[in-house]
Image (cartoon, rainbow over all chains, first blue to last red; front, side, top):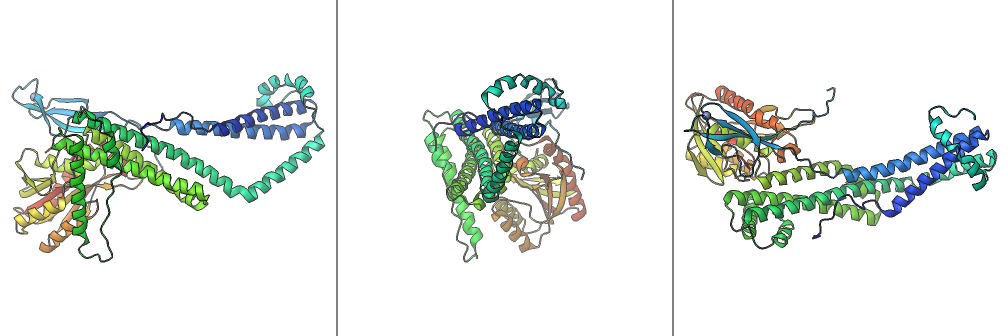
Amino acid sequence: MSKTASAPGTAKISTFVLLTVLIVLALSIVALGMAANAFLTGQEIVAGYLAVIGAIAMTLSVYVLIQSRRHVANIKIANPAMMTTIECRKCGFKNVREFQRGDYVFKELESCQKCLDTKMMITAIYKEIKEKEKQYPF
Amino acid sequence: MPTVLGEDGEILNTLAVLPALENELFQLPTGDTISQILSMLFYVVFIVFLFYGQRIQMYVMIREVEGSLYKLKYIRDEGRKTAIETIKEIGKTQTDPSARVDRYLEYFTISPQSMDPAGIVYKLDHILDVRDTRLKDEVKLMAPAVDEVQTNNLENTLEAAMALNYIYKVVRHYYIQGKKTLSLYTIMQLQMILPLVMKEAEAYANALKAFAYGQPIGDGAGPLLAAKLMHGYEVRKVPKDCVVATVPIEGRTALVIKAEGPGGNVGKPGDAVKAVIDENNGQIASVIMIDAGLKLEGEGVGEVAEGIGAAIGGPGVDQFKIEESISQYHIPINAVIVKEDIGDAVSPMRKEISDAIDKAIERVKSVILERTKEGDKVIIVGVGNTIGIGQ
Ligand SMILES: [Zn+2]
């Protein structure tokens, strides 16, 4: 068991891969330049080939870069707020606040502000997920 | 300057400055040579893919697994950290619990030999009891000052951390094995089940947070329903770690059972149901079980469904015991489930599930009205982890 929790998301892409990607990126730029050059000197077919090669190489290298960035950015544990509903059983007074450690459903709290003889009670603890789930036509 | 290729015009215009420089840098070969080189290149690429396509595919998969493995390691480390921090915070210990936690995370349980399966349920039951006692003792050693509720919560927290540790280790095992043997099929199998494994790991990570704070989880739907029914009535303890209350419902007498809250605890509903049936000499008109049920994709969270049978998960010991005691007295058994997926079941309770409890209570009442006569006795069991739910 490692004692040091490594900082996530840094230096996850190996330098070798990064170097390769950068070389490919540089070559793709050169290829595009050569394509422009060839086009200007009237060699349309060559220009087309070079442009296609340059474009593919550039897309691939950019894709690999984004991809490796993305799996780094992915590491996050969602933590939506938990809410606690407090109710007075006598007058129906209701209050929703954030969850505090020690809360549980049917825990008795301090007395109600209006009716001093009854204690307030936690009636529900839940998390609300705001984002809608993806809908499918079935 | 001639017009250049449509939309790319902007880029090409700026690049048009380069030619003067380029002509000096590389002598551009004639079109013929270039197309020859290109077709050669094409053949080379074709041949490479023909012979090494599978290997390239494998490296892509290995990369994918690697990414998930980083994530699993991060989740595992976070879980361990949360567990240690919670123990320090709740237990108020002076000593560092890290070493003990690390040892705890490596605990294993060996299930009984099943070559001759007769009587295996009670062997398994015994092993699970020993495990439970052992883990609770371990928690008490780590944090001696905590009460029963917090011991249960800490035990649950540590068990979630244990599960995360195990998932990480198994995935790492197959990843390294796949890399060592360069076997496409090892890597492929791992890559295929990875989305499900990741979902489970994320669920456990959420569960760990919930256990650490003592928040109710989705699996608590059953105990929450039972708590709502029994609240305000006298509650007494039944074996093991369960409570029962006698509640009048629709002219019948309901014996409502749930695990004792609000600590993280599932109790042993099997033993509790048996005890209550025996107390009443089998004079029970029906047993109604309420549990969180796994939903299929496409079904809504918090949908309520009803059916027949012992609705209870886990290792199967409690289901066996309940089925045994009801068949002894020929008691009909009904089940009501609240649907949710595996992620919802172990992560903090969603509002949809909390809201579905009132619907489920209506269903339970209609089952009682339709399936029993006035004056009958019924047992209502709220199955699940009662963390964050009192009674
Ligand atoms: Zn009031």
